[in-house]
Length: 283
Image (tube, rainbow, N blue to C red):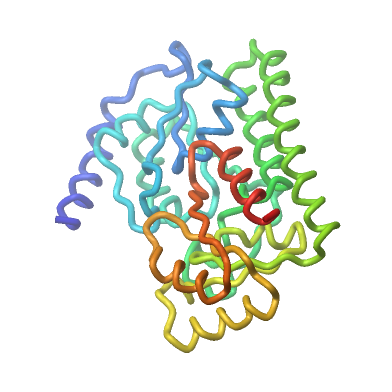
């Protein structure tokens, strides 16, 4: 079934390329994105002035996702593709996505953002893509989106700048909250199933310990070692994402006397997700 979907999607690339609208600029601009969180930032800046096609639904794994023909048709009708830049899905599908619409601009949103190498090299082409999970780098991401959106709707620069300023104020508020935690508590630590908060930990001096190991469920030895490291540093929260082993996270939390907090790093409401993380660490 999976092979059929792959072949069908590849065939769809050829079909939708022929069906693409002749001139996208005559209509409301449309951009395609890989995950919902990028759509959040675009919506905060551009509102209803731009249509956003999200390729991967929320809480669906992106490492082996195969787009539907309807999604490829939306790509064929897009003016630009706003890519995280080093997401597994983008690495695997970039050529086929670009073939579906050769006039579409491919935008790597991680331009001028310092990317952390994934030392285990099990995902993302050897680098961690979750840079938006730090307010500091989310602000850089927002600036990159603003720059590209202005090219799509140049007559709305004033309103775009105003919306961007409001977004930056919200990001700055979260940044202040995490900095206050750092000042008041020193190096906080937490346990997480999949290490999606590496940028947050690096930027604010926190310690992240992951249950997962090299992209796989942990061995009993690795699990015990990480649990002990988290215990020694006083971790009091265990984060777990959709699709991962909630029961194992719950067991770890009980061992630590910690709470389990479920988060969705790729959620369509970034502010809610980051506020949830901040409040969990405050406790």
